[in-house]
Amino acid sequence: MTVNGAGPAICARGLTKDYGRGRGVFGVNLEVAPGEVLGFLGPNGAGKTVTMRHLMGFVRPQAGTVEVLGYDCFRERPAVQAHLGYLPGENACMREMTARSFLDLMAGMRGMRDRSRMGELADAFKLDLDARIGGMSKGNRQKVAIVSAFMARPDVLLLDEPTSGLDPLMQERFLALVAEERARGAAILLSSHIFEEAERACDRVVFIRAGRVAMECSMADVRARRGRAYVVEFANAAERDRWARSRGVEPSGGTVAELRNVTDVNGLIRGLAPFDVVSLSSREQTLEELFFGLYEGDGPVPSPTDRG
Image: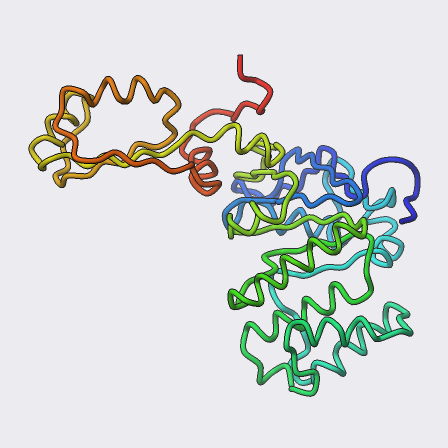
């Protein structure tokens, strides 16, 4: 991989674009190294797509810098796009064309002479290259976009909700493709709502909310931050309600209670001892639960190293 100067393959420092009414991105910092997959997680409107569009050079930042392989994404957009594969969240393939003619067009624009990789990817994703895009299902249109993004073996990949519309088998093949590209040395920024996908594909994750980075950490740090969720089944609803009142919680009926992010197991067991408990089971908190925990908080989220 040829990088224009030392540093990360993808870099945003203080990226700001204010569209008003709290929309946009504000002081976003992120870096992705060659051979790394960074998960970019957040709900609709959090700022993921805006960040991607800046990295593509489609938008000029109001403040801060955005670079790919050392090139300024807006001022040096042709140099950036020569090394970059982009899979947009909104599929923009030309529907009147066949998949083959569209991909040939994209390959020609990139100066690709060898089209063998196009065929390999089409075979892997069971894509009919002679089918007209307008007559395809959403999943098959997504396959066209995947082949377009990956077929030139770019140094940098920006993937915005990449498995939208794919069935589970094709999702597995996509994750295998991401792992293959990471091993080749590509830098990958992957925006996703599918938390299992991020857990399996990414080396690090950035959580973004309301246009600001809420937390950035490695997947190892995510696992260290997780507590466990415990499901407690009481002998009857009255016993569960008695336990709820002891905790100052409004009784809600039923016999089952779920406690999330439990870190003091001994304390949990001592607290349950006065009550008639039928069963107690546990599971690891999911990345999704951790993520929504951030959104329920009022203040800034501490970094994984700020554990006091």
